[in-house]
Picture 1: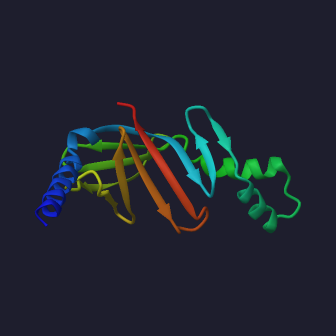
Picture 2: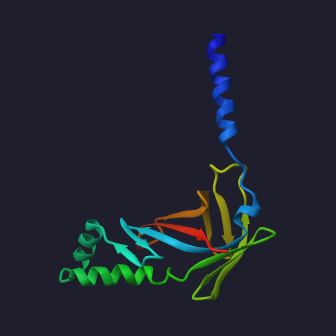
Picture 3: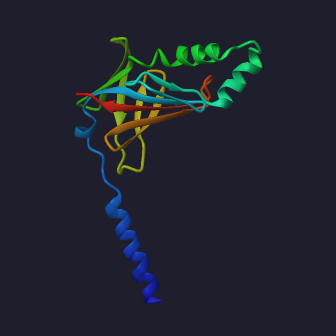
Length: 159
């Protein structure tokens, strides 16, 4: 029984040591969209490269039976084109600003979690997003907000 308690205590200490605190300093700066995953498609902003999933093409062709491969690609690009210029500026004092085409589109505050396994919550005037910081990338997953149904956006720090 003592061995079991000792093992449990050891495991708890190891997990507690792994849970790092996120600091404001890690977030400060300018973050631009690096890639976007939506409905099985993958878009790399820096390479301007789009991979379209077969399921996405099938769904689109259900609503538009005459859609060509080019039409499917255009539809997917119409979604990602608005994200190519998106950026977020994280400022001291738990403030942030969101931009598209260098135009301010939103601003608000953010709260930091007690450890890296919990989300960083960005709260604007009308929307709240949860981000995770891992490997110097900020990633948010948005589920069920219309079309596309599932979106994961990864930001990379540029300044």
